[in-house]
Image 1: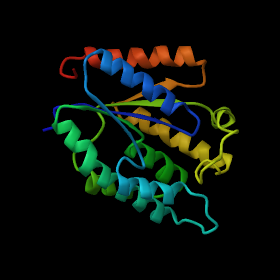
Image 2: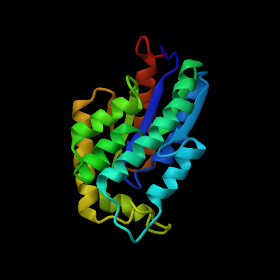
Image 3: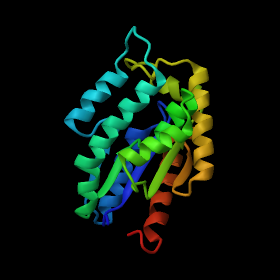
Image 4: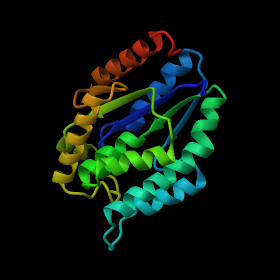
Length: 210
């Protein structure tokens, strides 16, 4: 059984995942944990190649199921080569996005059957789910304003109704899954980060987690 803990950070585009992943890592390292920070899609050379395929803008329409299967192909490689070995070695893994993203983006946003996503998850990472997920929730319009000045990838170029569906799917997932902690990311950064630190500290203080 893994001896480390698996923490993920979720949220829509522009919600502040990367910025706050750095914060979570700092908190965990202050407590003395050896932390491996990684991301999805990606995390290995092969998975990063798949990431470039998934995120790169293209003229050809990408079928929702093709997109979903590419994501799980990258995830299976990432889990086998990086996440599970680190956990077995006692390291704590901090990952930007995992399968909760796929339930939100591909099931919620694209309309892929959620049961199919669940089945693919069982094939790609049987028995492995985050111990804690911090879901950074921000209204799509406000979040997209934060990234308006950068070059947008294929997902970031989607229309507003897509991101509304994604947000609704995240909300449902957060209500149903006890490992997910909802963080209101629409507030100022200091307030958001205080809540994140509080959530991580509560997790660490729960018997059996640290």
